[in-house]
Length: 397
Image (cartoon, rainbow, N blue to C red):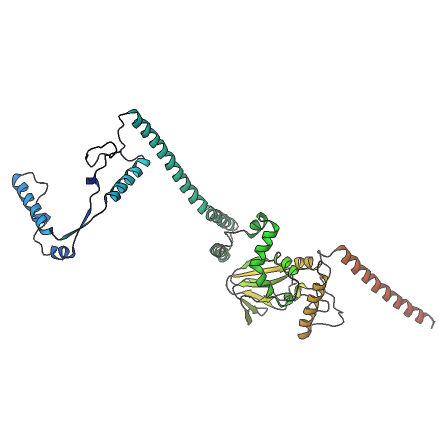
């Protein structure tokens, strides 16, 4: 506007553009800095606020001496006229946008219209920028706020219930670990529900398939079976010192170590037999319901987390639900399990020991009827045997 309307140079505190408002930077050279320590010129030698004629004379002499001293001892950083125009214009626009700067006083109708539209547009842009920044900050802190609310609620509950400080510290550390590792920021179940089943399957295969293939029992299974099992894997977190399982427990899950270390320990927890690392698998035999297993599908050792550990788990119910549709793979898995038990001399070949969990809540109606029919047949055979024995004994009387 200053150039268009040919405004003359104005004072520094006026809105009119002037090159005097944005001067080139003048910096002293190195020799000026080094010699300044021994220079006799000093501000203390001249009272710059003195109005006495003698003081004024001293001040003029001081200025002349300073100018003479710094002559050829300074460097001027020159900026182009275009840079100065844009720099000062941007500064004026920023002040005007935030309603802090001076605006041109309009004199004609077009100028009034321009100033009005410019002010309204500036307010709109300012409101949009502030609103977007506020929304961005709120969205960035939303997950963190929800996490802190959950943590604070847990702390209040534990304080209300008078929980022991050691347990409180352990729970708080678990929350901090889950936030640090990202599990508190992302809800896998929510993501699974929001995605189409096919996309969810592709995502699960990409994340878990390599992990599942590490299980020796599943290495020769059909890809479609592995695909179904991948969708059933669940992530579990264990704190330092937590027992994943104890010796004698009924095995209902298969575990794959994703991250961390686990110790296989004695029942009292004092002796460590072996340490399981990332990629290790345990509990696969307990979910197969193998008849003749001397351990009866019970855990053979206690397993304790060394630090924080991330484990993928596959429950017995989920496994058998999938195996119903793959009878050949089911037979193959059971045979592999028997081979492992046979190698460790933990299999009774005649299968006289029945698994307590041969029929569970996930068995189909056909499986239940077949099982009942077998039991009835066995009972009938036993009754016939007892009847013959009774008749033989009766003949002697």
